[in-house]
Length: 221
Ligand code: SF4
Image (cartoon, rainbow, N blue to C red; front, top):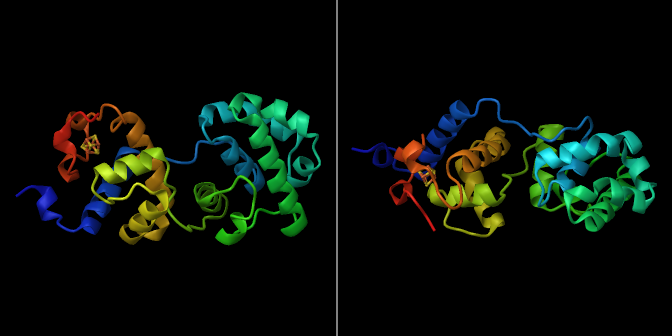
């Protein structure tokens, strides 16, 4: 009997996948560089549609000039734009970073709030960013970060049938232990980049193949 049949329930499969992902990517962590929750928030906003490597090239000078929420709130917007320009969508990102920092100063005494509904009040912050920031800055797990890799792999692994990130997140939080919600996403992103790519999943080399209902597809799209 195959292990897919033996581990019949979705939850059992999810937990076994989690164990294997931990073995495969033991050091998986947030790859953005930051020293404070505000800096993590800023770096995460900048990482939309951009690589973490690129963000890490930009933030040393950005945080040297404007190290905290108050400094960013009072910064000259044109200077902010030019500092974040290479991350793409720089006008929008600079506006959101400044808007978020102004609200943090005015409403949250200069500190990134911890509650999900407060985080979602900040310009440029949707659930994905809020999950990343609260998990890595405070060790608080509100939910599972669902980006394009997590969406694709969770579907291929048969852990959700949804395409909408909020519904995928709802499915995943019922399957995984809360302390693993964030590291699940990071490890799935690693696996999505290394093995289960969008165009050509390397099922023959995948350590999850015996747990994956899509494994026999070999090549998708
Ligand atoms: S077996 Fe194939 S489809 Fe399934 S997770 Fe691995 S690479 Fe992706």
